[in-house]
Image 1 (spheres, rainbow, N blue to C red):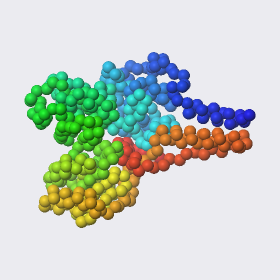
Image 2: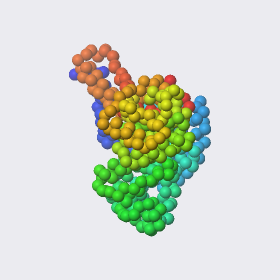
Image 3: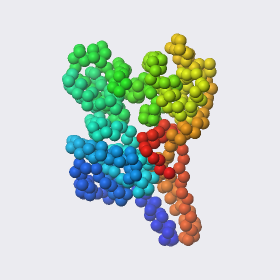
Length: 440
């Protein structure tokens, strides 16, 4: 017969390993009665946060601290947005929880600074990096409850769709394309872009979006005033490649917000460091970089100004004494490559110099280097995901149960899992730039 303590541990282990479907369920209507859904921001606590997350299909949660200045400025914007979002056909509930008071909540949801916003879609969290003014926040969140693929039946419907979509996401319009051709990919990339198909449109619309035959998939980047056109082949593999490559503009300006866009992109980054992004010479160089990006879609092209973000630029052995512009190929984490004899870009014939740089990189004429800058590492916050933590705990629990069968019941020693860093998660770390204070 098992000792009482072993029975208890074994029972808890079984409960953790049971699937949710095997546990008693609470009717959704009964769960919603726990919360006053009246267009106001829900005030949640540690005891009812999980219940709220499981109750609502779409919920934006503000993890805040009462002493945080950014949190205080954000609060009235959330109040305004909550009233509008509650009236949608598919409502989005806004809630907030004092993650400073409830430290276990902060730990469970990987809150490293305030405020942190997360969107829970059917219980699955996604970090929110969008605008924080009420009107823009509403427009941003509408995307998550919109149809996966909008069907547009007229020129005016196309214009209205683009206007409503705003500038926060790229927009894909399939002219003469069947909805079924992109529906699967639209679901996969819904968090990152708008998708639509246009069935009826005029020659004027074809001229406006610069395509001369159908089917055609047009990608728009309203905030960068860019567009590209894909004429096929329309098999899923080729479509997905085009969509993934078109999620970013041809030349991405690097800052604390845009750097987050790179976290899920596996391509290497051709990074050009200029003196000042805003001077005319730099703007001219960016145009050339865009042309190079069009011909090299297997790479991401990006640029950063030394004056705009000195700490970041210095991570690549750049200082006030180094002649700029300078180019490197960066893996998005801590490694980058300097192309031998081609890292500097002179003012004359920059197009040819960029071509030689890319040729040297592809031929392997590079020096591999590693970022050692403390200023860059301060931006990184590679934390192990909560799902992995649960997995570790379950494994440890099973091991403990097995060991307890061989040990005396009085033995109480428990091992605690430790967090680890993952280089593949490094790009996500810069979200702390949106927050006023870090958690110590």
